[in-house]
Image (tube, rainbow, N blue to C red; front, side):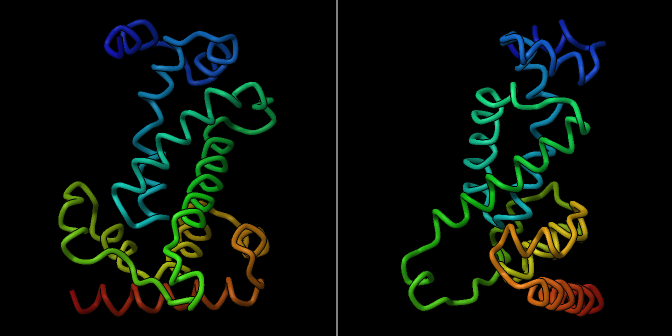
Length: 183
Protein backbone atom coordinates (compact mmCIF):
# COMPACT_ATOMS: atom_id res chain seq x y z
CA UNK A 1 0.00 0.00 0.00
CA UNK A 2 2.86 2.42 0.72
CA UNK A 3 4.19 1.96 -2.80
CA UNK A 4 0.72 2.79 -4.14
CA UNK A 5 0.59 5.85 -1.88
CA UNK A 6 3.98 7.00 -3.12
CA UNK A 7 2.97 6.59 -6.75
CA UNK A 8 -0.48 8.11 -6.35
CA UNK A 9 0.83 11.26 -4.71
CA UNK A 10 4.35 11.54 -6.12
CA UNK A 11 3.55 14.91 -7.70
CA UNK A 12 1.24 16.23 -4.96
CA UNK A 13 2.52 18.93 -2.67
CA UNK A 14 2.63 18.55 1.06
CA UNK A 15 -0.26 21.00 1.40
CA UNK A 16 -2.44 18.86 -0.87
CA UNK A 17 -1.59 15.75 1.13
CA UNK A 18 -2.50 17.54 4.36
CA UNK A 19 -5.81 18.69 2.91
CA UNK A 20 -6.67 15.20 1.66
CA UNK A 21 -5.63 13.69 4.99
CA UNK A 22 -7.87 16.17 6.80
CA UNK A 23 -10.68 14.82 4.62
CA UNK A 24 -9.96 11.28 5.86
CA UNK A 25 -7.93 10.02 2.87
CA UNK A 26 -5.79 7.18 4.25
CA UNK A 27 -3.70 6.88 1.08
CA UNK A 28 -2.81 10.57 1.35
CA UNK A 29 -1.90 10.01 5.01
CA UNK A 30 0.40 7.14 4.00
CA UNK A 31 2.09 9.44 1.48
CA UNK A 32 2.35 12.17 4.13
CA UNK A 33 3.96 9.64 6.46
CA UNK A 34 6.46 8.67 3.75
CA UNK A 35 7.44 12.30 3.21
CA UNK A 36 7.77 13.21 6.89
CA UNK A 37 8.65 10.17 8.99
CA UNK A 38 12.45 10.42 8.62
CA UNK A 39 12.51 14.01 9.89
CA UNK A 40 10.12 13.19 12.73
CA UNK A 41 12.22 10.17 13.75
CA UNK A 42 15.44 12.21 13.58
CA UNK A 43 13.99 14.85 15.90
CA UNK A 44 12.71 12.18 18.31
CA UNK A 45 16.13 10.51 18.34
CA UNK A 46 17.92 13.80 19.00
CA UNK A 47 15.59 14.59 21.89
CA UNK A 48 15.36 11.12 23.43
CA UNK A 49 18.84 9.71 22.65
CA UNK A 50 17.43 6.19 22.50
CA UNK A 51 16.46 4.37 19.29
CA UNK A 52 13.62 2.31 20.74
CA UNK A 53 12.09 5.31 22.51
CA UNK A 54 12.52 7.42 19.37
CA UNK A 55 10.70 4.80 17.30
CA UNK A 56 7.87 4.64 19.84
CA UNK A 57 7.58 8.43 20.03
CA UNK A 58 7.67 8.71 16.23
CA UNK A 59 4.84 6.21 16.00
CA UNK A 60 2.90 8.18 18.61
CA UNK A 61 3.41 11.38 16.59
CA UNK A 62 1.75 9.83 13.55
CA UNK A 63 -1.08 8.34 15.60
CA UNK A 64 -1.72 11.79 17.07
CA UNK A 65 -1.31 13.37 13.64
CA UNK A 66 -4.08 11.19 12.23
CA UNK A 67 -6.38 12.13 15.11
CA UNK A 68 -5.49 15.82 15.29
CA UNK A 69 -4.76 16.82 11.70
CA UNK A 70 -8.08 18.66 11.63
CA UNK A 71 -6.58 21.08 14.18
CA UNK A 72 -3.98 22.21 11.65
CA UNK A 73 -5.42 25.45 10.31
CA UNK A 74 -2.74 26.48 7.83
CA UNK A 75 -1.64 29.61 9.71
CA UNK A 76 1.92 28.24 9.73
CA UNK A 77 3.73 25.79 7.48
CA UNK A 78 2.68 22.20 8.07
CA UNK A 79 6.27 21.17 8.79
CA UNK A 80 6.52 23.84 11.51
CA UNK A 81 3.33 22.57 13.10
CA UNK A 82 4.49 18.94 12.78
CA UNK A 83 7.83 19.74 14.43
CA UNK A 84 6.01 21.44 17.30
CA UNK A 85 3.76 18.40 17.75
CA UNK A 86 6.80 16.10 17.55
CA UNK A 87 8.76 18.11 20.13
CA UNK A 88 5.85 18.12 22.55
CA UNK A 89 5.21 14.40 22.18
CA UNK A 90 8.90 13.52 22.56
CA UNK A 91 9.20 15.63 25.70
CA UNK A 92 6.02 14.12 27.12
CA UNK A 93 7.32 10.65 26.25
CA UNK A 94 10.57 11.42 28.04
CA UNK A 95 8.72 12.55 31.17
CA UNK A 96 6.48 9.46 31.19
CA UNK A 97 9.32 6.99 30.78
CA UNK A 98 11.85 8.30 33.26
CA UNK A 99 12.90 5.67 35.67
CA UNK A 100 11.52 6.10 39.20
CA UNK A 101 14.98 6.53 40.75
CA UNK A 102 15.69 9.48 38.47
CA UNK A 103 12.40 11.07 39.51
CA UNK A 104 13.19 10.66 43.19
CA UNK A 105 16.92 11.40 43.23
CA UNK A 106 17.05 13.65 40.14
CA UNK A 107 20.13 12.05 38.60
CA UNK A 108 21.54 13.90 35.59
CA UNK A 109 21.06 11.56 32.66
CA UNK A 110 24.02 11.21 30.42
CA UNK A 111 23.36 10.74 26.74
CA UNK A 112 23.47 7.63 24.66
CA UNK A 113 26.51 5.41 25.17
CA UNK A 114 29.05 4.68 22.44
CA UNK A 115 27.53 1.26 21.66
CA UNK A 116 24.11 2.82 21.11
CA UNK A 117 25.56 5.57 18.94
CA UNK A 118 27.41 2.97 16.85
CA UNK A 119 24.05 1.35 16.02
CA UNK A 120 22.89 4.65 14.51
CA UNK A 121 25.15 4.30 11.50
CA UNK A 122 23.39 6.85 9.31
CA UNK A 123 23.99 9.77 11.69
CA UNK A 124 26.54 12.45 10.89
CA UNK A 125 29.30 13.47 13.31
CA UNK A 126 27.41 16.32 14.99
CA UNK A 127 24.29 14.20 15.54
CA UNK A 128 26.43 11.51 17.16
CA UNK A 129 27.94 14.10 19.49
CA UNK A 130 24.50 15.54 20.33
CA UNK A 131 23.35 12.08 21.42
CA UNK A 132 26.20 11.99 23.97
CA UNK A 133 25.04 15.16 25.73
CA UNK A 134 23.42 14.97 29.18
CA UNK A 135 19.63 14.97 28.90
CA UNK A 136 18.77 18.56 29.82
CA UNK A 137 21.65 20.03 27.83
CA UNK A 138 20.68 17.87 24.83
CA UNK A 139 17.02 18.88 25.00
CA UNK A 140 17.80 22.59 25.23
CA UNK A 141 20.45 22.41 22.51
CA UNK A 142 18.19 20.56 20.06
CA UNK A 143 15.20 22.78 20.74
CA UNK A 144 17.20 26.02 20.48
CA UNK A 145 19.96 25.36 17.93
CA UNK A 146 18.26 22.80 15.72
CA UNK A 147 14.55 23.59 16.01
CA UNK A 148 14.83 27.34 16.56
CA UNK A 149 12.81 27.73 19.75
CA UNK A 150 13.53 30.77 21.95
CA UNK A 151 14.80 30.19 25.49
CA UNK A 152 11.52 31.50 26.90
CA UNK A 153 9.61 28.84 24.94
CA UNK A 154 12.05 26.12 25.97
CA UNK A 155 11.78 27.15 29.62
CA UNK A 156 8.00 26.74 29.42
CA UNK A 157 8.20 23.42 27.57
CA UNK A 158 10.72 21.91 29.99
CA UNK A 159 9.45 23.58 33.18
CA UNK A 160 12.71 25.37 33.92
CA UNK A 161 13.87 28.94 34.36
CA UNK A 162 14.95 30.90 31.28
CA UNK A 163 18.41 31.26 32.84
CA UNK A 164 18.63 27.47 33.21
CA UNK A 165 17.76 27.05 29.56
CA UNK A 166 20.51 29.46 28.57
CA UNK A 167 23.07 27.84 30.86
CA UNK A 168 22.21 24.33 29.60
CA UNK A 169 22.58 25.59 26.03
CA UNK A 170 26.03 27.03 26.76
CA UNK A 171 26.98 23.82 28.58
CA UNK A 172 25.96 21.79 25.53
CA UNK A 173 27.93 24.04 23.18
CA UNK A 174 31.02 23.78 25.38
CA UNK A 175 30.79 19.97 25.59
CA UNK A 176 30.20 19.63 21.85
CA UNK A 177 33.18 21.86 21.10
CA UNK A 178 35.44 19.86 23.46
CA UNK A 179 34.32 16.54 21.99
CA UNK A 180 34.66 17.79 18.42
CA UNK A 181 38.20 18.99 19.06
CA UNK A 182 39.17 15.70 20.73
CA UNK A 183 37.59 13.33 18.18
